[in-house]
Image 1 (tube, rainbow, N blue to C red):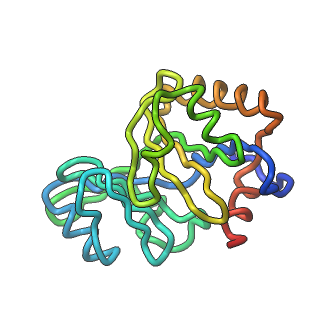
Image 2: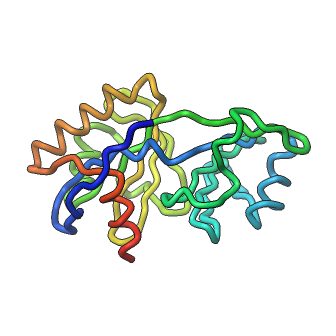
Length: 192
């Protein structure tokens, strides 16, 4: 996958949209998925749409009864998610690579942008919960990230990605924001 890199620093007062789709994701699926997460990550999120951040900065999301999303850390270091196989058997289930698009929406106008493109209230966003909703007619999952300042990470299907990303980019530019790069976002998050 090609990734835009070496962008200018993300400034706290600016508005930015960043494509972070390069962060690896897998689905743990099956009756053994909960035990797999507990054994490999310390614990699994209990309730539907709960999120847990691991000691290695991975995010675990409880998507459905026996289905969990594992989002790798930004630094893509040595973790349980690697590029070895598209499908890996686990005891009582399977790990499947999950190809979706992800972006970060950063800046003081993020709530305004969210309200312009969605009926979702920003009050529903929480760092320990995944919010399933729609933005610009695309089904998305949104998570509030608190550090270094509150911003949103948004995931959507690859089929909706081009439309959603270009729509978000247009609205970000309307508030004098800009696109930024994966490296700049990684530096931004690491600055905490």
